[in-house]
Length: 327
Image (cartoon, rainbow, N blue to C red; front, side, top):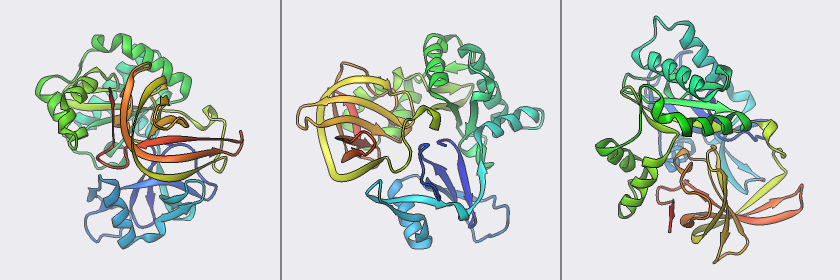
């Protein structure tokens, strides 16, 4: 599921995307590659590849078998065949391991455990519903790394978000982004949109699922599980139609807190455009119901074979130039 990582037989590290996968492989995107030529069981030196196009270029040059044409997606996606999986890294196991060795972990590890426990206490969810992902899950974190948390299950996530919204300013150690730190955060997430800086700054400052805990940046990813969905791989197919700038109105933002996130919309230029969706965490909590919006992303036709319906959606976050703002 989203938040899990996969280590391949070549010691490449992929991050799982979404929770719907074909039977013989996992949809996952390259995240870390060995920084040297080691091929031993434990490779400790990795470098991170951030941009999606750079990940694809690396695979095309070195491991093209991880680029797979998905008929349902209507395009080539990054994925890991089942027989190339060496190990699967589970976020809940990571938190359990840190808690059981709390006297021996780093300051970052201790802060991550403390934040997890305080969020559980303030939101009322079970500790078994939350985990630690990102560089700590892989075992390559540094003392200046971020704390990346993940919470699973639709009902649990909605309860978590509702209570966190009420209590965030009361949780000891948590600070919202302000001042210079907010400016740096906006530059990191939205560096391609300097002309929109003021509105993006306001949006980022209002978000609940991110901030500082002690001296560490944190982000909480809320993820649905397969039981929350009413479809499997192959029930829905997509056809790409290219980049598009659109405007409209947000009709429903109830799934804006999740990764992947989703906004139901009414669009004026494209009446059949029904959704804005993104697999990138920066588009969560981005805009609220009844606001008018402007967005740029990749337009695609969606066919639900199970329901025999067709509509269009705009996918946000595949290019640095994609954005979503109130208008």
